[in-house]
Image (tube, rainbow, N blue to C red; front, side, top):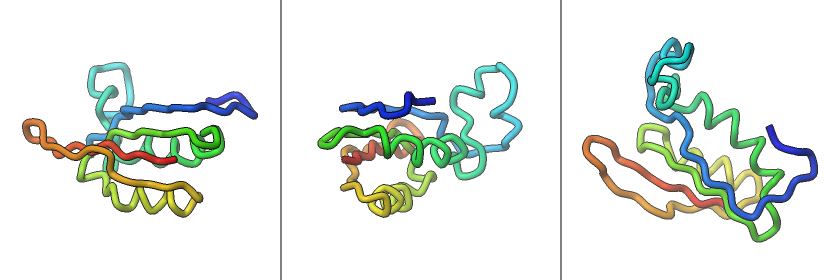
Length: 104
């Protein structure tokens, strides 16, 4: 996924985050672009431990998520990895309560 030893200044990720059945994540239909499986966290939970080591000192990682993805838990995961973590933006768009989390 990432080159070993890479240091990246800014990472922005809008992963599939909509909670739903794992079957929606399979195949090649449009649902694979938003379907995040259980709690909408299937991709997010795989990504986080892989992204922490490649963020450069002083770098930032921004993650788009839904309130249903348990953002406070995601922030705690980042803090446990030694990063500062906060909600950078929080707003409702239609029926979605969206957040952008900032880690550095």
